[in-house]
Length: 530
Image 1 (cartoon, rainbow, N blue to C red):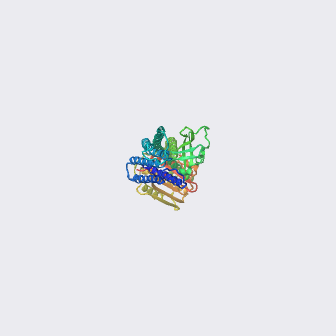
Image 2: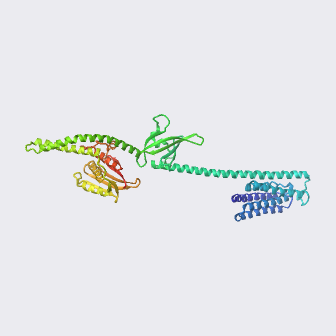
Image 3: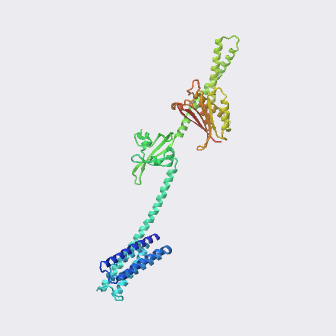
């Protein structure tokens, strides 16, 4: 209400100033619109200025603003009655100013105030006319010979106009304020609903983007920004096909619902996304675009591939176990027989060479079958708390003295202290040994072997990295390196990395490989923290 009263004071000052300038203009032009002295007109104008200024001062200190408004209305009605009197009474041109008082009260105090102001103005104007008619007060204008019926008719019209103005103004003011309150409440509800929708959309873990009918991106939530490693401002108004080129054609020829695609992020990582499509409609049900919900399926696809590989390896492992058991016994007999032949006193040079070849090949075959059995039926885990850094140091110490290590090899290791995992020390050492041998073979005896042990805080895991500067692995071969019997080394069995993969899985970990031709290879192993 205080704000409305401040506006009223401002408008009153403007209106009073207009009255003042009109009076001065008429006086300077010699136009006679006042039957009384001009100084009385200026006096009442000054009274209006004074009451306005007093209201402005009291507005800051007076707490009962309704009472202050009523006092202002009464004073205005009395001053305007005096103004009407000095400008002709019943013939005054300033009679409509009463309406302004009624409108003022209706706007500020609504219907009750408007009707109250109409009553005050009716009484004031009626008294003025009757006092003039019955010569109780002198009339400043030439006496107009109006009849008593005319007087009643004039009063009736004045009172009717006052009350109609007061009622309608108050009613409209109430309606405006009610609509304003409803609109404010609606805006608050809308803001809360909008905030709720925004928080829901921003809180979901899946990416969500919307497009317009032209296929341009209009919105991307925070999860989508993280998945794509792109800001929403960068993607806004970008054609969807620029982000997902494989969406250009739908193989089914009908509306899209679900599909998968590959996207290369700005950091160079290639990820697999699962997309779900639905129509975006406005409040009238008219289609205005499309909603795409997407998820990063990269890890899920890796898990599926790992499960398929495990199933495949389980079948092969059972076959390998059967073959190994069938071959090992005859192999033992052959080896024993060759040993006896070698102990014979009479032997030729060719016989000796033949027996050496047979012994070497039988040893190789025995090694292959041993790997078969290890892969098919790995020993049960003997879990202990293992300091992974110490285990890496011990394995490197032994490996550096093995025949595979050369003087042209260099070693770099970064090991965070006090990193422990729950695992079988012997099987973990076998993982390291196989990875070290593969690295040496890839570098052909010269290069840099780098080993890192650190905590992966983002995934709450322990990370082991083994890197080399060798010839690398082609993209076609990376997908097959953990398959049994697959090898690119001459004389290799193709079981080393398969055994590594199986041991890592038995320790509830995961293994990945990054490699570029002629730039080396990095094996990344993650184990749960103990």
